[in-house]
Image (cartoon, rainbow, N blue to C red; front, side):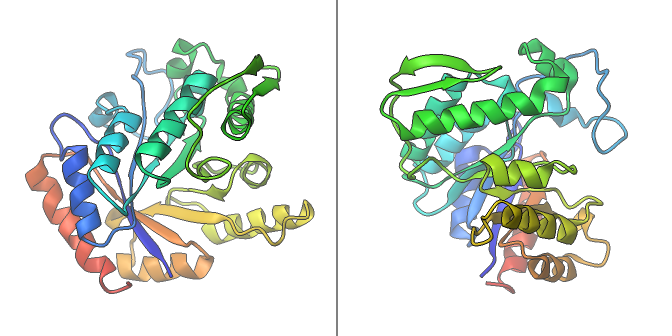
Length: 286
């Protein structure tokens, strides 16, 4: 069975997190996801990933953990996720605690979408060199897993290094929440198999079917052919030239178990008709 979710970027002028969460749960969506940028440096040297000018709303992101906590507090079944958390921009122990606390507030409903970021200046402000971002991401994820699973945790790497420590609470989900890698490159299959539980690409010119097969092949090479990966994909009406219903069928055939629809920041009156169209759409598939 395919699950459906919404990916949004809460801002001060768009639908607020709690209201959006209540709506999503009431209309049959499985999950609600919020993205992250701590800030955007005015220098703007890094090109926007999809080309063209960076949308204005990239300067206006809510903190996803605060927004998702509000959603979790007013819902019962809706899963909440980051789309994505920029791991290199966080202190390891603080992030481990935030994730565990959110999973507690949500009673085990948190999905940890992660990425390494595209804005070199933003990352530099957090003390991380762009060339090191994936190495930093890997070590922080592995270190957080130690914190989530050990009463006394320690980790010794090049970028993350700490002596034995206590850090509670632990997540509700054993071993920590599922970690979904939101990226695409030739290195993604190895990274997914190494330290993640799934893949979370955007439906923009990527060979998605090939990516799924590459992850499965990499898992088989490492003796993990029986592992079931969480395969989620972000799509939308504007990403489906042959129609969104047709695209959903294709994505399910590729092996994705969760399809997420994007909604851009706008006034509530502008967002509600878009959400209603997606709600009507998923009723044809669930």
